[in-house]
Amino acid sequence: MLPEIEQYFRLEKLPHMWCPGCGNGIILHCLAKAVGKLSINQERTVMVSGIGCAARASSYLDFDTLHTTHGRALAFATGVKFAKPELNVFVLTGDGDCTAIGGNHFIHAARRNINLTTIVFNNNIYGMTGGQYSPMTPNACRATTSPYGNLERPFNMAELAIGAGATFVGRATSFHTKILTDLIIEGYKNSGFSLIEVVTHCPTSFGRQNKMGSPADMLKWQRDHGITVMKYNKLTDEERADKFIVGILHSSKAPEYTAEYQKLVEKFQGR
Ligand SMILES: Cc1ncc(C[n+]2csc(CCOP(=O)(O)OP(=O)(O)O)c2C)c(N)n1
Image (cartoon, rainbow, N blue to C red; front, side):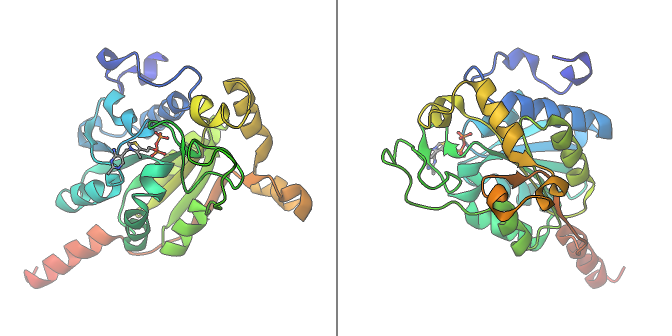
């Protein structure tokens, strides 16, 4: 671990419980780098997670952390931000945690535009419980609950967040670490709901069932399929079919919920 990010980790909790080759450590590295670059006050920063492999991330981080219940990371984070709006609140969540059981909290946190920086570790599957399909499992892919191929279609979580009212939305992969670190920085700076989707690899549950090769092969897949909007715009529809955009997907301004709430309190207290 780089000395400049060590201060953000509970080193006594290591080694972590993730499988060899998992992408989660790369995401944590980028998060710690972003926090360091922003010089965020560690004492006034909270990391909230739900349940799952991704959600275990909060256990390894040396901040005030909340490892909550499955699907409820955003609900707990909303409570923290309402009670203490002066705190910086990050949410670390898996694709199942955020878009399946937690899907409704996701929509409404985006709609309220509450100031939370949400990082979704999208490994396309329920990793922790043995590889069941999630709303992010691509059509026809295998999971333990779709051994003949997934009949369902995934939805685009970034587009959903934009439609619901999120004011900052970006996407990166575990391969695109510079883009990911920059997105976390920009997401944190946005005063409102920020979603950063990280397409990452689960070699054990997703990769193995879908014959995607080694963890390094899965990273190469991310490198070859995640492209910037400039490159994307130059492609034909056919070439775009299996590609996705990495970088900032949406940025807008809207009133932030806890600030509006504070204004209301002050108005009725006659201040
Ligand atoms: C209410 C509830 N339902 C189901 C579970 C079992 N469970 C634990 S983690 C998990 C899925 C995790 O998938 P994801 O959020 O994608 O995270 P990953 O493990 O892939 O990082 C499930 C279904 C639970 N703990 N609580």
